[in-house]
Length: 234
Image (tube, rainbow, N blue to C red; front, side, top):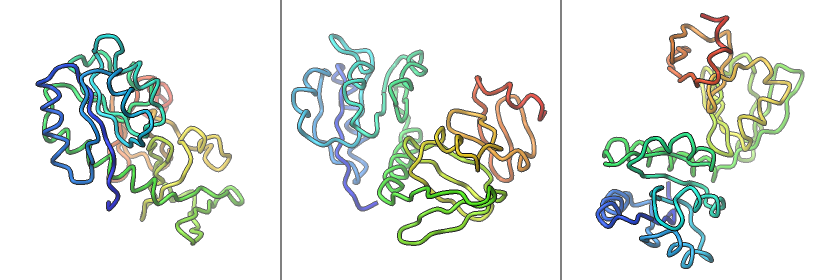
């Protein structure tokens, strides 16, 4: 990805701030615009600056990270870095992109960075879901081209914030539509939602375990609230 992404780091603990800074600075696509010791300090400075990625602790005095995120929904990507894993579920209610538990592990952080790059590459490409035709075909706008995709060849859908990745038997496409909105389209009524981030075509399912769906060469997670959906497929 050629685009430089502006980011900020917020943590009330000095050692944790330095640790986060040392991890972030290793990635050349991230431009660190500020490192702050409190949410209020960050708000006072970044109000008129366009930020792409927010790295924030959660448990902070005065204003915690969740409250801050609620005020900064305009920032596309929010990464929480915290010592308290119990915040995980609550963090996703304010549209967090990822949730890292201290101490930060290099491999886990790299995985997060790869996902950030992938997300912004998709956003820049801005492929658009156009329309369905006859219930068996969808057209996807890829640049200036219209690509015809057979519905029966779509293996699964993956949510990427405002976008959805459409994975077929031969290729991957991305559309500017949330997975929730896409599943409301008549063309996608046959898909099974197995997780907040995944929906699958039932006829591609090879095996289901307690926590995963095996579908061709892919292994997808099952969300706790979606287990009942798969009860008849075991």
